[in-house]
Length: 113
Length: 114
Image 1 (cartoon, one colour):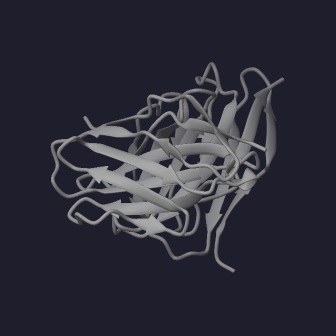
Image 2 (image 1 turned 120 degrees about the vertical axis):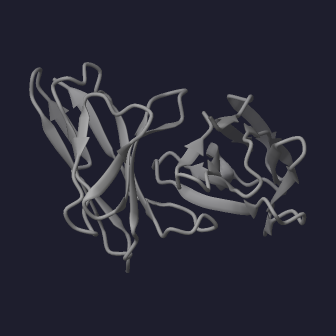
């Protein structure tokens, strides 16, 4: 079955460390997205990509970086510049038709050690 | 910039009763799409229902229906015959036709009382 796989499910970061969250999809979707979810704040867009080798900043991109070298993959790196990284991170994908919904992965919970 | 507002942080409903969750949005576009997503305790995001802005008819999916008022920029979700499995966070989302970004509200936590 097609879907989106996020790994790991739980991740711990030490101070000053960069960590990378994985997102892979086999839905043949062109667009991929990263969201951060904090209590009471809904989903906030970090980065999104509509095509391979291209991506755009979302509303809260500072302290994060992404790459899109393959259609199937859109990894998110949380850098040491992100001072408050503890959150639930969701990856999503969609075809480029607005009447189609986004499909989501199961998320990664990132915590600070 | 487009915004989505869910003014009810939490709602409760008795099992088998009906509940309506509110959502308003702000946009200058005429062509857009709206969605309701459900996030149960497992934190999976599940599509509940979608609405195209150009359609006047309100979308319906089994026990779930929307009241779409385009002029008022309102998109409420009605859940009929509420079940214990309906307990979840519900997010309203707006799909921007210019940027292909999806903008989410802050969510409404729905509790279903047995």
